[in-house]
Length: 184
Image (tube, rainbow, N blue to C red; front, side, top):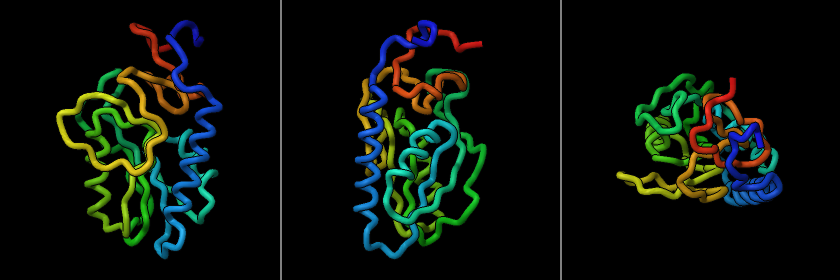
């Protein structure tokens, strides 16, 4: 498995596809009858794969935008400092916005983003995360409206999640082997 860097597969490709379809159907149901436009805001880069599959699963008119933030760099632990690298291209004022995240780990990045986007006056603001890491946190989390999978507190890669920029292209979610160096 990826030259020994993947300790084990945590979530198989087929289960991921099934769950993304379920989330898309739930989002479409929740947005039915709403007048506000639906905008899905993907968090670059980790959420790209999840978002691409999710928007195809939402049977409702929608637009997309992206914001790029990071609190990891080349580490397997969050630094706790959120940096914005790319902001939204369009206004979200008056829209029903769903933040599409790859993983909720410490929750600090998400809290920062929710606060930032709320100040831009959307009609509603929800959160959809592919993964929610089960771990102790030293602060309250913002509500997560849609969760793909709850996972243990392990460093995972694949399906858009990376280690030092690598492994995003794996079609499954795998646990990174302890001490695995980044490729290259």
